[in-house]
Amino acid sequence: MGNAADEGMKLVDDYIDAETGLLVCGKCHTRKQKRISFLGEERIVCCLCRCAAEELEKAEKERRDRETLEDISRLKSAGLQDKTFFGYTFINCDETHSCAGYAHRYAEHFEEFQKKGQGLLLWGDVGTGKTFLAGCIANALMDRNIPVLMTSFPKLVNALGGVYSGERNEYLQSLNRYKLLIIDDLGVERDTPYVLETVYLVIDERYKSGKPFIITTNLSLQELQNPADLEHGRIYDRIMERCTPVAFSGRNYRTDRGRANRESVSGILRG
Ligand SMILES: [Zn+2]
Image (cartoon, rainbow, N blue to C red; front, side):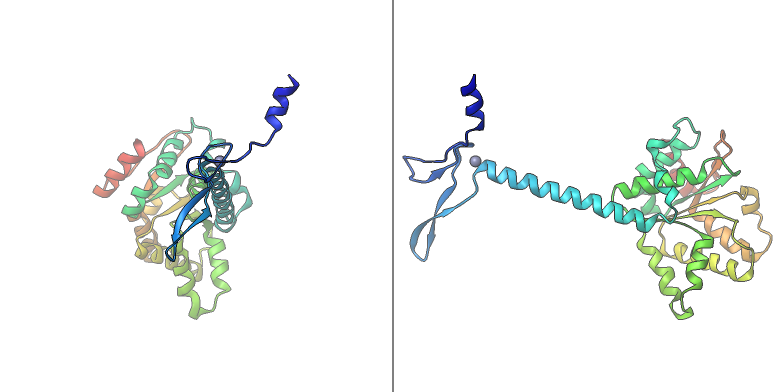
């Protein structure tokens, strides 16, 4: 019995293969040396036996996995502008929520939506889970190493306020490095001409980039379809064109079936 334990502890010895004269690994029984021709001379050089090569590959994979995790945590700290968003994940999601499936499928099929430049308009009353499900989408994509920015208009207005007017365009365009832009709570920002203009610039830049964005809002679809004036209208029009409306009432879901592109998008969302 003691012998068996000793056997396990003992290091396996490498040996010389009688036929080739080369060193062989005592563990995996593949060569640790090979013959090469160097300046017309034959030489014996070291090489990796199979188990050493596997060992190396495993360490390499662990390093890559660790780096990916670090990349993801960097993505999240840059992309989630509110600490509470970190906990908004599908794992914490009540799957019986009527809109959870749509959010899930949007994240799952993101590459298709990205090609179409299609986002979502999550609209409905306060406390129906719009921000939560938007956050679930953000976290799910960043877990796949896809850069997402989840922010709000008050935060964007604030950030743009600190940028020289000459660099505003650059700042707005820099938002396009995010594959998905999520802007939470449209309509809570102050309704001044300056703020309205900023909201328009952000939406218009994203619209022109052809990249998808998700908007959450307490405004009703009726309010968005019947804007009070031209200034609101040009914002809402761009949102309505690129974002499939998903109604949050806690129970109901409705999509606007007005456009052909939206039809196919809605198809994917319904699964
Ligand atoms: Zn070996």
